[in-house]
Image 1: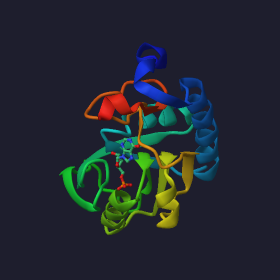
Image 2 (image 1 turned 90 degrees about the vertical axis):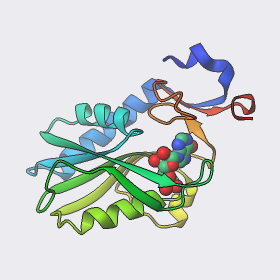
Image 3 (image 1 turned 180 degrees about the vertical axis):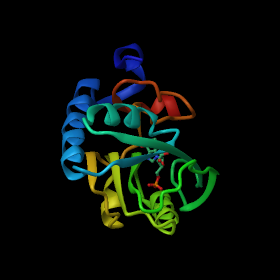
Length: 183
Ligand code: IMP
């Protein structure tokens, strides 16, 4: 879905499809360089990371494998609590593998902290994180993220995998919602 089709729903467009593509090309090249000679396993966190996974993996020029996890984070409204349940586990044994977790957005980092300790206990050769978007609270909580697409303000955003009530995931860019949509 193009941003202009639903522009009345937004107060501000943060990133267009072109901005996102440009940044992913940079990150893909960086990842190729950092993992030179190693075969990477990308782990996408459903549902939000579908778009990032598809575009990041294609921005890379080295072989990579892909697997998925689905987790549900219990929270009130738009905030997560860090209490996480695994809805779908990996199909892959990650021991001795080089793992890069691919996330859509890190807000508090609570969801990710749980996921990381769970994955670390499975003995990967290395374990790093890539996120397309990161909010300021994640920085305060010192979540160690190796690759960040964009640091964004502490606002609720939609598009490029990020939803509000299940909608807007298929939006090509990322925007902040207008109050009339959520009130
Ligand atoms: P955290 O545990 O606070 O880091 O929450 C991360 C999860 O909250 C993400 O994977 C999203 O599902 C959701 N989330 C956080 N901020 C936003 C947002 O601005 N828009 C849409 N979803 C968000």
